[in-house]
Length: 103
Image (cartoon, rainbow, N blue to C red; front, side, top):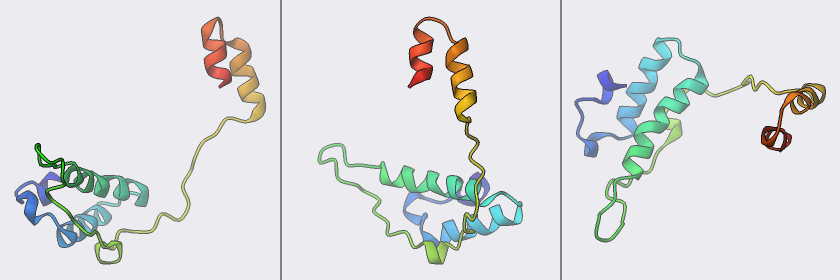
């Protein structure tokens, strides 16, 4: 990310800059989910820049996902514990951790 956006002024980080970054991340064979997470960072940084007196956002952007053209996240592996695994975890936990793990 730094090699693509690092030399840009904040005001120059726009849809075009994120499109270029998305292309480079795709070329590096990163997963679509990783690419979306990386593209989220500059969006959050810009959204968080606020005027200290008014609290108003200083770097407003209208992000265009079609233009940025990041790959679609089709299927994502989300590991989960089965019911019996959860029961085993709670059963082996001790003290206050048993209540925590039961949640």
